[in-house]
Length: 178
Image 1 (cartoon, one colour):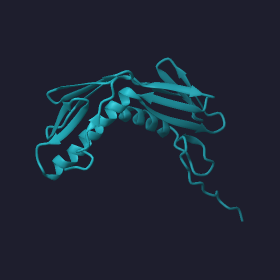
Image 2 (cartoon, helix red, strand yellow):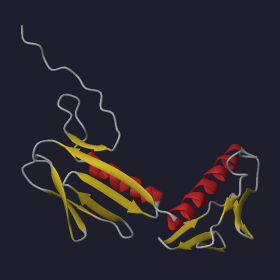
Image 3 (cartoon, one colour):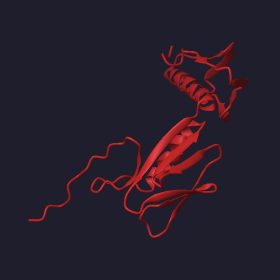
Image 4 (cartoon, helix red, strand yellow):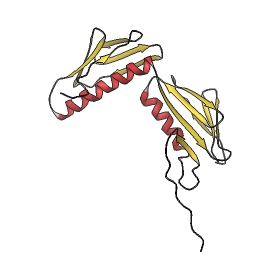
């Protein structure tokens, strides 16, 4: 068996898990998430645990077994606690402002960049340079953070750009004048 897949997922008291056919829906205080399980995976609720099994022993079924269990675990954790990604903006005149359902980014281009905030995602900005992205869906939180970072990734010469908090940027020397 898959080492990850055979571990049951514990359901907290504040979370409700429903399984209808292949559709797994998880409802909690932070929101509601749905997931269609692969055909090779079988998801069952047993008391206060979710158990994932598979219908074969080939490599594809084994891979999907662990994947399905991890996705269900992330859904349960997301609707109970939520996921957070933090970005920091470095550079003279670089800033971010939340305007309604958009994040307005000023990153040194000739025009401001508007990033639309997806549903169930909360974006807050502190001190114009610290962006916090929160939400129940781990995949969407990571996607929003990586798309905002992709507008101006940190460059190695001056260190300007959008980076994750704690991300190390390997710095380079500029050209030497002889």
